Amino acid sequence: MNESQLTAWLTLSFTPQLGGVSLSRLLRIDSPENIVSYSELEL
Picture 1: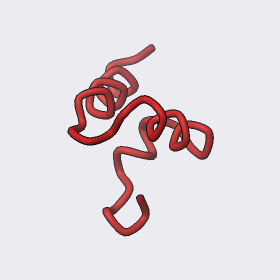
Picture 2 (picture 1 turned 30 degrees about the vertical axis):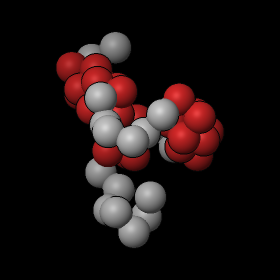
Picture 3 (picture 1 turned 120 degrees about the horizontal axis):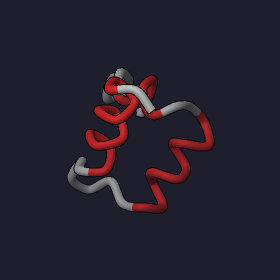
């Protein structure tokens, strides 16, 4: 795991109101690095 991947995982892990179920759903669709770059509308 490189630094950008770790940063993306930590960002998602500590996002308020993003629980385990929601995070799992997002990760089925895309990688953590891409999810972090989504706009609010894309989420």
